[in-house]
Image (cartoon, rainbow, N blue to C red):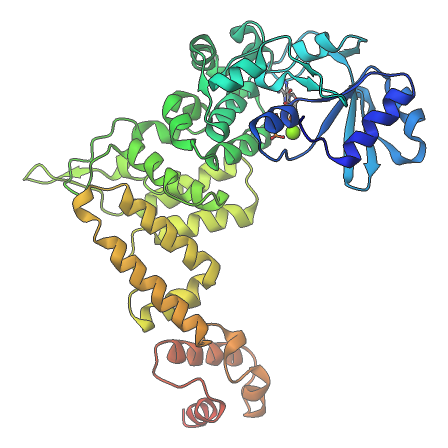
Length: 438
Ligand code: ATP
Ligand code: MG
């Protein structure tokens, strides 16, 4: 029998003891059937919100009573308990005009997006699965509950959710579901950028992100039209065996699932189509493409309202992606100074993926990346100095020497540059002597 966590069991037991029906529902049932650990366990119940509130007393918080959701505090964290619900009419392709409560579990399951998300499981291990979700899950199929066109027209975010479930779970879109995703893609314009962003990040981090993106470039093009010129863009260059789109999605597939890194992998060459030139030998070049990628990616990430820190990191990785791999102590220390350890490691991962997405004759570059990584590991183990924090002198030392104002910061930076470049040792005496000798 599928294991329901203790805190959730107790919620189900309390609701049943009060005379209501109660089921785990949606993503948690799907994930449990797949043997994956669910992110959260949602409960659906015949109890009206006020009945749920009454059953749990002080442990219940009315977090979304309008939609029938009450959060119950348990030792294992909050569990969302939502009353069986049917959605009213959809007019804006985003959300229903109204929701109504119902006493029928089947009706509640019918409003859910995909069959694999429309299953319920109770305390006794009984599975309610009126739309064949389990069979679809076993066959690896993604299928809408009901008519796909209608379901995507009700809420266009489901198009991106569908791509996300394919990307994360490796499900194949059933034909009609897949076609309806494309047919209705323009409706994604109605969806709030923040909601697109959330689904997109999950999609990009999926094990099958490449397949999901490749299936629907036009859907991506609705919110990121800048990505469309990459599709089928022949690079006309012996370094490359893929067009720009496929190069980018292969790069995505070859990066660890860190959101910023996956995003950078997808966008790193977005500046290639606009910078393309063909030389007299018929060879394609993309001079200055990294800078154009930076500019485009910055605008694309702003449009989807990514947090500033996220955007800046992605842009920094893109900016650096085409520079030489640092393979000397000095080069790695300089890169560390400018990027810090975390971003430098992400950059090396991006370079690795970028190279794996190039023609196989150029894989020798993997060895250069390994070399850079070895140097990085060694320098960090040796506690090499690459930041002001690690410098053997600080602002007070320079003030004591009589420096004032901006000269203090400038001098510290100059000392750090010399230490990083190996021109001065990171030793207090030597650094102070250098300053007094200036
Ligand atoms: P995750 O693993 O990200 O939590 P999930 O399937 O649980 O995936 P949630 O957004 O947590 O997704 O939603 C919980 C459940 O609510 C879904 O499984 C689905 O049954 C239903 N649901 C969520 N969003 C929609 C939607 N836009 N349209 C229809 N049903 C939805
Ligand atoms: Mg969930």
